[in-house]
Amino acid sequence: MSFMEPFRIKMVEPLPNPTREERLKILHESGYNPFQIKDKYVIFDLWSDSGMASMSQHQWAAMVDTSEGCINPESFDTFVDSIKRLTGFPYILPVHQGRAAEHILFSVLARPGLTVFSNTMYITGRTNAELSGAIVVDVPCKQVVGGNFNGDLDCARLQEELREVDAGKAIVILTLTSNNQAGQPVSMANIKHVSEICKMHDTPLFMDGCRFAENAYFIKTRNKVYQGVPARDIALEMFSYFDGMYMSAKKDGLCNIGGFFATRLSDIYGKFKRRMIYIEGNSNHGGISSRDMEAVARGLREGTDDGYLKYRIESLSTFGDILKKAGVPLVEPVGSAIYINAAKCLPHIPTAQYPAWALHCALYVEGGIRCKHLHDVLKVDDTNERENPKQQHFIRLSLPRRMYTLSHLIHIGDVFKNILGERRSISGVLIKCPSEHYFAAIMEPVRKC
Ligand SMILES: Cc1ncc(COP(=O)(O)O)c(C=O)c1O
Image (cartoon, rainbow, N blue to C red; front, side):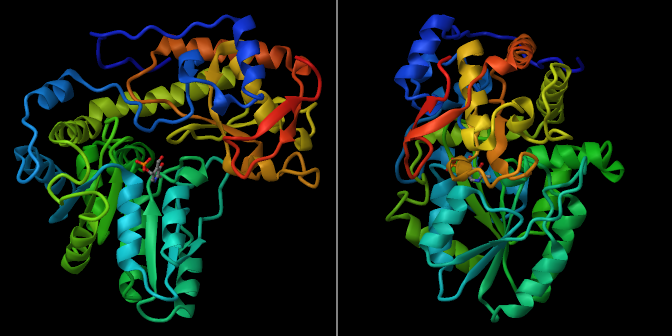
């Protein structure tokens, strides 16, 4: 074990503690769908790292110490100054969370025939772009087993694609780190190359920067050239290659709500600012309160501190080591979350009986753990091969920031060990009531558990 939490605990929240029998009953009543379970019955909620961070005493103090204002709040100046200093972008606008910025940006950029290219677009960005009439094309790099920067975009393919698109009809979004590429980082070389290609084709380049600080720290630890360079300086170099960014502050901003849009393009800024009034509110608060802007300003400072990032990235990799020791097959090196191959964990369950879903149910029963299996899980059918690397046989464990301790992670490792030791007792599941979205599906075990 190599990391230590760089904080001590001042306020505690008791963990929910339903018994195993209660959890079995709760799972049954939820239609064997862990997403339907009330949070108060979940002991470890690893569904998302978003909006779950424990805020610091400095964030809470800044929130209490400000005054609410709706026209020219002082907290807006604090917010803007901190993001300008951090990113180097001159134009900053607040939003209540990341998808609001996506919605406004794509509605501002919308024009007939627009194509959005990305290493991989996050679901809300993709949907907002499509709602605005754009076509979204993912051009991820070829995944290299054990590769350090599997979040990269395929530059050769981007060049080919851009040659086919009419002038002014494309934009590129780089998602850092790349959720749909197992939370893997994007290399500085790739960012630079994508930026050069975009300039050559007169195509704007934006960042989905939810986890930019983690990406910067991965560059620091996975690329010798950046060893010893402060993560903030690495991030500043990253931003210098972009025309702008949007960010949900619910991730690396260490906040429970908030986000922003930042750019160096004055015309896009002007359009965004005019549009947001009808959606998010005045450009001086963007749908969040003054205290939330204080929390974001302070959270971004803390979330880019090298000491904090060392803890954050090492806690993820240590969690990976704990799980590996328990025999869990996962994607390596670990990125911004842990991706586990459920089909390999439960080889006796045919893929048509959703091993990822079955593993998720077992984790809830054995350990009160909720996580996430990936969106298209309900599309699996028996034509899928066991070793098919498609996402649907994977579960993702996200670690909310500054929330769970090392002993929690060790305990979760023990839960996995017990499950894998008794794996044959775990049943596959079938769909009882299908749903468009996995949140609402009702499932049933093939065998009674
Ligand atoms: C990569 C990425 N982009 C955008 C978003 C959307 O942010 P929000 O949830 O604040 O709307 C998320 C949320 O998880 C995300 O992970």
